[in-house]
Length: 168
Image 1 (cartoon, one colour):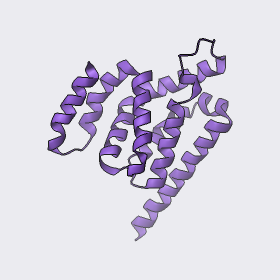
Image 2 (cartoon, one colour; image 1 turned 180 degrees about the horizontal axis):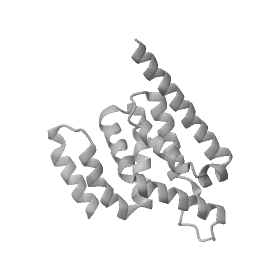
Image 3 (cartoon, rainbow, N blue to C red; image 1 turned 45 degrees about the vertical axis):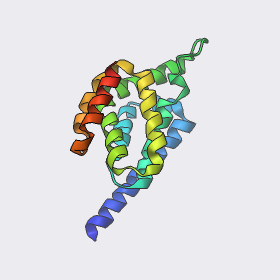
Image 4 (cartoon, rainbow, N blue to C red; image 1 turned 120 degrees about the vertical axis):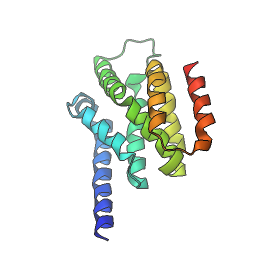
């Protein structure tokens, strides 16, 4: 009983922290993206994906989706991006490049094993944007990430097909 209470309390603390990060990202992006603690905040959000608590998983997925979908990551615009957006994108790129394998492994593990079904579209959005913004890195991350994901042996052919398709 004590262990359950402790785990539940920690999940609530983590959810509150992730909700705070979401508010910072939305309301004061300068503070959020340009903070020296930004990489740590992202690492925490990625680590939270390994918890088995729906509310905190949804909060972390929402934060990660809002980061990879941020307007600063849109390079298709023909206008010159603002200096702030250049700084935001650099901060995001740096952290995602460093944490890509872990992020991808937690996303794949969650979607295959632990995440609530309602999170599937968010996970797909995040992975799709990783493929768009980090195509070369994704090819490197994917084999390492798949090695970290617990899956039945019956998934081996699908895993090998996915690796073949992605590397093409």
